[in-house]
Image 1 (spheres, rainbow, N blue to C red):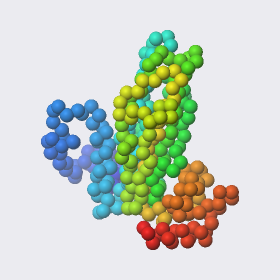
Image 2: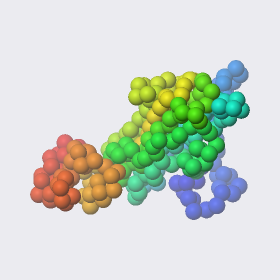
Image 3: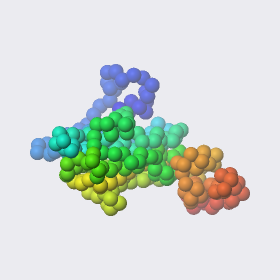
Image 4: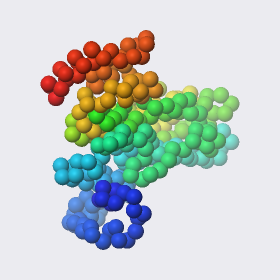
Length: 285
């Protein structure tokens, strides 16, 4: 997939695309492991291979690769328990994350790459479970800064009702790890995206195991951002201004990372101060 996307992105998948490619997977390696190694979550390793191949070929094909993506791997969050009438239920939310940026494009927001999946609509999740989605929003400043910006992650807040609709405790949540420690890295001077975060009632939760909740509990899951591409000081100031107006980038990050000074009242660029700040940043880059 990684090789094809670089050389023939517009050609439909077919057998001929794979014929020129030769694979080396020595026995005992992570891509050809031996018993009794665990392999149930092998898709996670497969997702990272795309990122690794891009990085390995970045020096020879800099215009063809993309930075690391926050949606790699496509971490699943599994909710399950019993409704107030005792009937079991379960549902899965695939977290996703910001896609990595490339030489020509910003990363897509909240993307499940390279699986090309989609988010479960809030209405479907709430009709399928006894939980309430209090918030689903893009996370400002979560995309890795760069000449091209990494895609934004998102924040989702789930509440266990404590009224007459409350399910029978415990309500179980299995978090699949990914990007909680190591963020999606940028390329060619672009910076890493924001890391993932998991909170239970505002306190850091266990992002590598099972969490048991009770009525009234609130969990927050922050999807990570994608890596940026290129020197942030080379991003077009008007693109930075657009991101600020849309709420994707804060005025503070516009100045500190991109060197673009924006008046918070008029939302106009201070051209003179921006030129001065960017010149000093370029000298340090």
